[in-house]
Image (cartoon, rainbow, N blue to C red):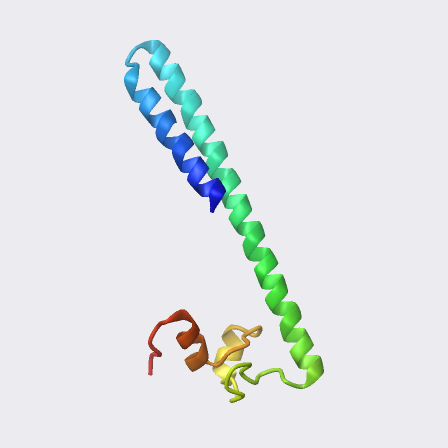
Length: 110
């Protein structure tokens, strides 16, 4: 989260400095700032994708461990079977739909 906040602050200052100067020099500064903004956004995207990849890899390895234990497809909270439809969509699911919704604080669609 820190990099997102820092990037936001940098973006705000770059945009503000670009607005101050309307001359040809300001146009050059604006183009440089656009390039900086693009680099920052790309960096943020890479960080987010890397974090997502690590989370998915962790979920997948936990699912494999449950498979070896013989508990794959069983909700880790309530011990009920996870529906085949849910496992088909998210094979690494550790929680049934009801428990996942409770963890997220969202109502279950029926």
